[in-house]
Structures are given as structure tokens and as C-alpha cells.
Length: 66
Image (tube, rainbow, N blue to C red; front, side, top):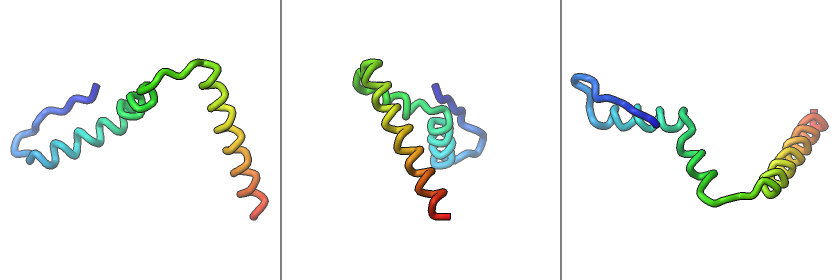
């Protein structure tokens, strides 16, 4: 869980900016979005396989352009 404390003479805007940065670096938001709906393990494997195929095709296309 992201936690920030108010520093002396710090504005609310800079406190909020530090909090948002801490949340994004900790990965809390992406975890919440990913766990929003239940996905079975077989479905997760299928999605990861599709992602890997797309990644490899992009790399091949990028290498062939050079």
C-alpha cells in the first residue's frame, strides 16, 4: 500500500503528485485492474501465449525492416 506523509511547508499539490508517483511505481493500480474480473488459469495461459506471439511477430517485423 502506498503511503506518503506531509512534509513541512509542502503544498497539497506536491503531496498528491508524490502519492500518484508512489502508486504507479508500486504497481497497485495495475494489480487492481488485472484482478477486477476472475480469469481462469487456462484463459490466462491462452492470453499470455497470444501476447508472446504478438511480441515475436513485432520483433521479426522490426528486424526485417533494418
